[in-house]
Image 1 (cartoon, rainbow, N blue to C red):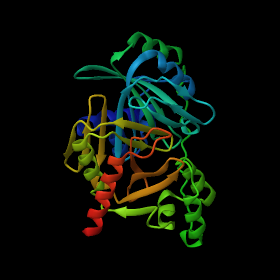
Image 2 (image 1 turned 120 degrees about the vertical axis):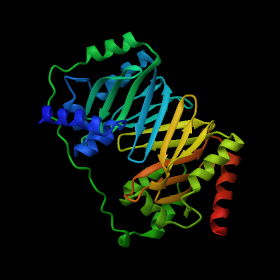
Image 3 (image 1 turned 180 degrees about the vertical axis):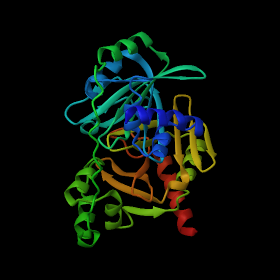
Image 4 (image 1 turned 180 degrees about the horizontal axis):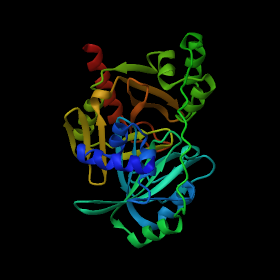
Length: 345
């Protein structure tokens, strides 16, 4: 099957020039991991190390471009794999304003190294996939990467074989909203002292994020118009306050912190082009936009959360905040202005 799939892939590249591997895989009716698996022996090699080992060793290769995405948003950040905390299934790579990751390593099941030839030369990457065949995280070399160190890392962890992928369908949440105790959920939300306690609230009550939002009072979570993202980004660009943009999938969340340098909407996409950060987000895919207000020991923390029609969290935005400090005034005012505009409409 793999040779046949590889041949179909070659034809698909001719038929659909400029399409990325993820899109070509969808056209071919396979997952991106299956397509990558079929490319082994051509421009791709299978690696045998676990994700934790590879991430640790990536610290030695210098600056790379890291890409984390879901079906609706792509988050690209230049940076180094420093300040790693990879204990257990959860991991952190903590470099605010550079490479800042939250990792759920139990989802990271296969990894490949690629060397793709394009008009500008050879593009090297290491790509991690989950059991559903989706790409969780991709790491690309840059002009600032120590290429010999990169090549040595890949050679150390080459697999002599290319075993079949054991793919599984994703688990689907089936929580029944009619049986939820809204007063209990509202009370637990108000009792939070840290934003990270929100995950525990969801787990305890078997809720999706949107179900939790609908269960609590309007002072804690409320919907706004789906133009909220573009309005907030425009306000942040004009006022040059630092914001945080989270984009993730089931295995990885990548976080940008900083000012918005260049904002460029284009053909249904919202694009941010900073010198070392890029965001591409399909604005037309935003089905629900929520403002949430979570209590912490430092006061209320406000965020914008964006969801697609299938329930995928597309992205999440905060004002930049340092632990122990209250929320940024400019950000709170930008969100408040947005909400007032929405209500007036």
